[in-house]
Length: 89
Image 1: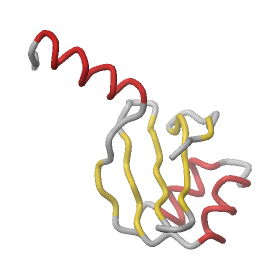
Image 2: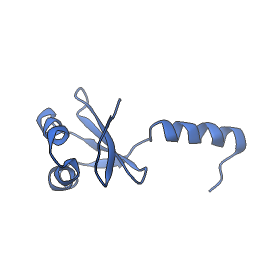
Image 3: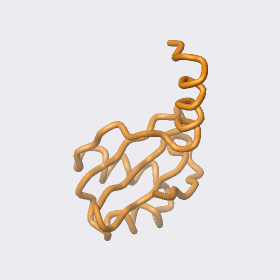
């Protein structure tokens, strides 16, 4: 899923898959959460909101089940480095 950049203090990027109704949000902390069962209309309103961070907090965060999702390119790069050098926590 391709994510669009968001320019807020809490949200870095987000992407939506209408087929599965899955909204992935990447936070500025690097965490990625996937929200399940998000209708198309809610995702459209989220992406067009003047403040996506406030819309997420008011309309998505508590309304839809979420799970941690795999990160984007940073997570892929980390996995490759872990495979080469071993994981360091």
